[in-house]
Image 1 (cartoon, one colour):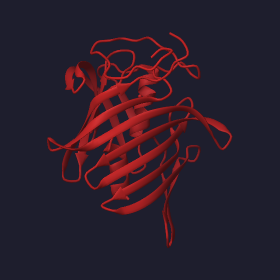
Image 2 (cartoon, helix red, strand yellow):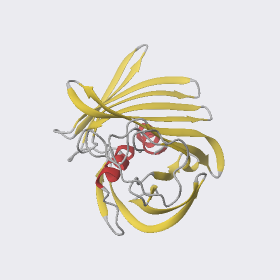
Image 3 (tube, rainbow, N blue to C red):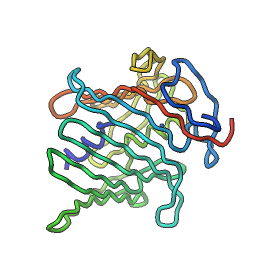
Length: 250
């Protein structure tokens, strides 16, 4: 169980009338709005990352905002997080609340060293629980996890921070994950080098833990780097490309 959420946490870890393909110029500030809810990112925005383990490139990842869709008759955000590394592939379809980006349903297709898994996470935010189902050829296995508050997802929370524009030095965000609680703190502003250039960023860190997300400081607040401990060492996801989504107006 811990492995499932650890993988979901890290592998980890989003413009105008047309698509912008390529890296966003460091320091560029684009003021834009989305037809559904005035988001600073548009439908089909794609952020691409190189994945490194202990400084060695082991694969790639992408984070795609697919826009607003319907789930069980309600409007929700759809975000796809895809990871392709050595002997590990994971596609996550994440359905999130329209206003708060809280997870509602996450569908995962995992291929881990040739072993394929289909995992469904169903969140009951009103009752602070998540039901996880492993779908197998010989039957399904289900586990329910109970918390005492609404359950969040770290990747989805990056979109909420971008929507709210709430990153300020020393600001603290309590986060309830399925298996534990952490605090995410904006600890500093610093320059971060990516494959797209050098960006002024806000560093968001988890306490306890060693998880970090760097958001570039323009109105887009793109997460240009994501890092944290993973199995054999520290994993870093560093932005290599950005494709801006479609927006309704400037």
